[in-house]
Image (cartoon, rainbow, N blue to C red):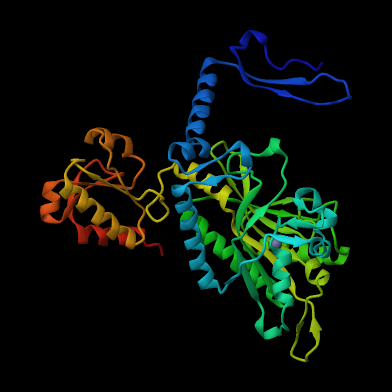
Length: 452
Ligand SMILES: [Zn+2]
C-alpha cells in the first residue's frame, strides 16, 4: 500500500455514493462480487458544495425533466429504444425543421432508405467484418438492421451514371438506426439502441474535400450558436482495426489536420479513435454533469467508394473514384435532445419549445369561454404553434401555478377577453399580466419564433 496523502484526522465525512452488485463470473462457480465506491471530503464545506452541485445536476438531468414535462418515456419491453411522447416529438420535429432549412441553403437532397438489408450489402461495406457485433441480425444471420445509412446511400449513387459536373452530391437521411449496445451502457437518451441522426453523405471529388469540410463546419458553428452550445473539437485517427491502405489513411488524416490547423481554433488529437473506414473530426458537448458527449462528426472515407466500385466520369470521360464524407451536425437527435433539455433546464426558447402556449379559460363551465378558447387554439395551431388548453375543473390559481414555468406563454380568457377579442398574457419570463388584442399577440409570437 502506498503512503497516505491525507491526515485521517482531517477526514470529515465518508459519503457513500454507489453500491451496485457487479456480477463478474470470473470462474464458472465463482460468487458474484459487489463493487462499492465512496467519496471522502476534507471539510464539511467541501461536502456541502459537492452535494449542492449533485442536487442541481440531478434537477437538470434530462431524465428528470423529461419525465416531469412528459417529453419521452422508456419501457423495460423496449430497453434502449426511447418512446417520444407528443411533447418530445414536437421538440424532435422542431429540430428537424431547423435542419431542413439548412439543407435547402446548403443544397442537400433528402432520401428515405430501408431498415433491413441482405448480408451481402454489409459484406460489401465492411460492416460484416468489423461491425457485426453491434448489429441486429435476423433470419439466421442472412439479413441485418441498419446501424448506419452509408451503404444504402452508396446504392443510390450507384444507381445511375455520374458525371464530375453533378458532384458534390449530398444525400441526407433522418431514418432510424439500431446499434446493439450492451444493456449496462444504456443511459436515458444519451446512449440508446434505436436512434435517429441528421445523417448525410457527401459524394465528392478529391479537389472538393476541403471546401465540403469547411461548409459542414460552418453549418455546425451556426447551429450550435443558435442552440446555445459551446463545444470541443477532436481529431480522431486510425484505429487498430481498420480497412484501407497506409497511403489512404495518411492522405485522409492529413486533409483533416490541414483544415483544423488552418482554422486556428484549438483541437485535441485522439490517436486510434477514428472510424474503421477513415479518420474524423468530432464535436463534443458537455452535459449537466460535465460529461462530454460526441454530437457532430465529419468523417472522410476512401474505402466505401472502392468497395462499392463507385465512380464518376471526368471531363475526358475517364472513370474516377469519388470520396465520401460522412457527416452529422446535431448527431443523434436523442442525445442532442438530452443535451438541450439540460442546457435550457427545460425552459426552451419559443422557436424550440414543445410547450409554447397554454390557454386557460377562467371559468371551466362557461360555454362562451370554452368556445373562445377552442377557436383561439385552432387558430394558433394552424399557424404551427404548439398549443395546449387546460379545460380541467381545478382552481384557476392552481392551474397557473403548476404551468407557470413549463409554457412560454399562458393565455387566460374570461368574459372580458371574449367580449373584446383579447387575451390576458402571462409570459414565463415576466410576472406582469398583459392584455393584448389577439392579432397583435400573434404578430408578436411570429416575430419571437422567427430565427435568422
Ligand atoms: Zn455514414
